[in-house]
Length: 93
Image 1: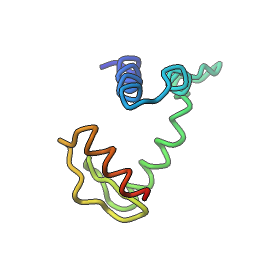
Image 2 (image 1 turned 90 degrees about the vertical axis):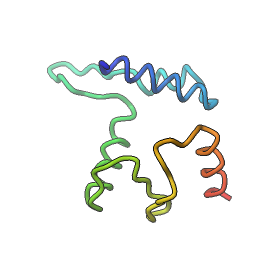
Image 3 (image 1 turned 45 degrees about the horizontal axis):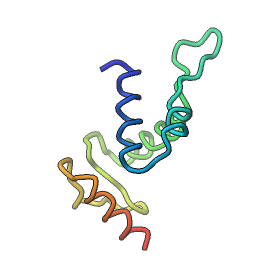
Image 4 (image 1 turned 30 degrees about the vertical axis):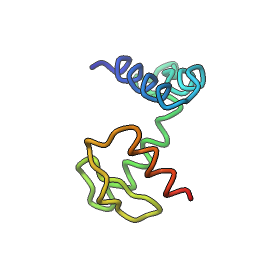
């Protein structure tokens, strides 16, 4: 997939979870900076932060998820949206 196709897919997933489409489109819109080829978008700084966070801990395989700094080994790549919603709701409770 191209970068634009990946961003479109991410927007679709977020909208399916109840996120406002216009807000997601704005967050995923590519920033254009004169003279730079890879400027990213509004989500880029957070993505870089979490990639660094996980690499420092030796994580190089997904899905490896940390919740409040603790590895959540029960999470799996086959989880449905409902399973994620339930897990996040319980973690926030």
